[in-house]
Image (cartoon, rainbow, N blue to C red; front, side, top):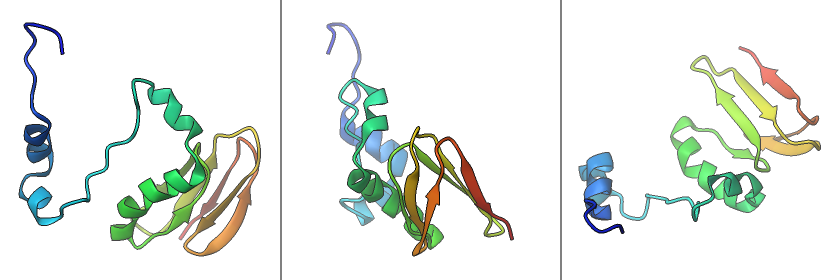
Length: 111
């Protein structure tokens, strides 16, 4: 920390973001391991990416397993788009159904 700079304790930041919910749901706050290099997340192992996605998708009743650099876009009507930003095919699983997305391509399911 730089001298003369104000700092906010981590607990105050988390309370401001999550409020009382933080107290009700201990252990649900995940801090991504950026370590000063946000672009490093692009090289995340699939197992880690899946672990980070799971709690975010659970309230949406959706499961998604894919390598890093694969995006999932969900729509209110149940439609979806999966986009592969990789230079190689990506094997993914959406709600238990396996698919392969070509490099730099996307697939969709419209309702």
